[in-house]
Amino acid sequence: MTPLGVSILAAVASLALLGVVLELIRSRRLRERYALLWLLTGVVLLVLSLWRSSVNTIAGWIGIETYPPAVLFAVGTLFIVLVLLHYSTVISKLADQNTVLAQKLALLEEQLSQRDRA
Amino acid sequence: MSEIAAPVRRHVDPRLAALRRVAIVPAYNEEESVGGVIDEIRGFDPDFEVVVVDDGSLDRTAEIAADKGARVLRLPFNLGIGSAVQTGFRFAFENGYELAVRVDGDGQHDAAQLAALVSPLLAGEADIAVGSRFAADAGYRSSRSRRMGIRILAGAVSALVRQRVTDPTSGFQALNRHAIALFAADYPHDYPEAEATVMLAKHRLRWCEVPVEMRERQAGQSSIGALAAVYYMVKVLIAIFIALFRRNPEVRS
Image (cartoon, rainbow over all chains, first blue to last red; front, side, top):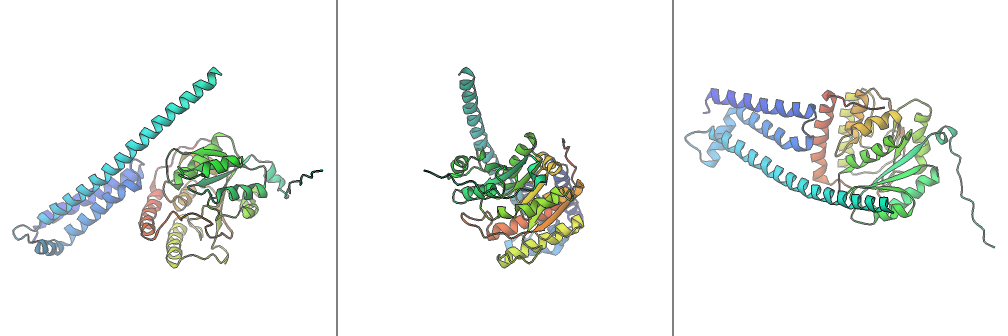
């Protein structure tokens, strides 16, 4: 069984994560689109830490016998990898769009200077 | 001897004719329908400035709109409907327009119904009027899952703004200068209409629904599929609840 202290700490940490993410959206520093995965992470970790027997069940499935709370770390790590991958695709798209913007700007400036000369 | 047919000028409400007015037409790959939409708006009122916001189309949407004499704002890549429409609101705000209507480039909004849509604004009864498919029994056909989604959203938005909202995803809208100024300053991103309704209530702008009929899409694809619909439901529901608590933006007037 997961030690009570570990469950409490995990629940507090996931509540804190949810609170921070919601506040970031509220104060307009984070768009909902990029917050959904974080919210899902917080909710899943919160469920796992409050519903204590579920951690044991999952540990049984994947054969963790010595220390069931390791499931919390595994799930947490999995979600962090997902979020990072998602952000990598977002950054790639931003970089592509940034290139297009710079090129368009150069074309427009050239057009404007041609027009000024005429 | 050639005879030039006199253009059929329908009667335009003098209160409307006195306003600087613009029709914002967001379009993404709508080359088959955008020309007809522009013609219909001109058919309702030839003095509407028509601004097509081309949201990174890969087809000839922008060329066709320009050939029709519309002004075209060509976004360098697809920004999504919210940001595309906001580009139109910014244009309207910066250029001093007093009344704006939004008519989607896919042809589902019938410009002949603009008279009904703008009338609450002309009467000074509302800052924004939204065409609703469900306010009257207009007989709009739609898939059951989509109707269900719209009903859930309608319930949530109605409760939050304490006013009966029947069609929270309708993009067929008419706005006065106050509403244009707000949306030019701040507009939601992906499927924006529901969240925008909550924003309007927070800013104490007057909102009303007008029963309209809409057509089935004439061409192209709907921007929303079945699985994506569920994802956006969740996203929009989160967004409208957060919108209630969110800090208001500064609005220039």
